[in-house]
Image (cartoon, rainbow, N blue to C red; front, side, top):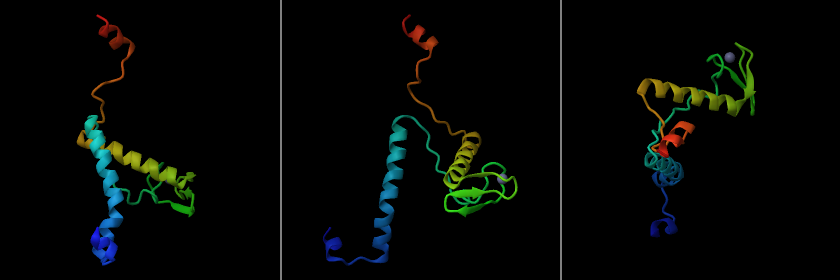
Length: 118
Ligand SMILES: [Zn+2]
């Protein structure tokens, strides 16, 4: 703390400080998910804003908020399109690596509720 107040900040220090909230958030999500028995898969986000979530070809962010695909003519909110690409990638991990999200206490269905009373 003394060093921070004195102001002797280097590039390395700034990099650590700037990265801290993200690392902390990332750690927290993994920690909480592990407590609940939920597998966490980290997804790369490169090209997710340039790729068409419908046909997989390269599209363009024509305006800040709008994505257009010249191949299949798909148009969508750019953030929505990027999020759909990240979702698709996460499914690939689920099928390839066998990563599963599960709850140790599954919600009770009609059947399990009835069995619980026996
Ligand atoms: Zn497309």
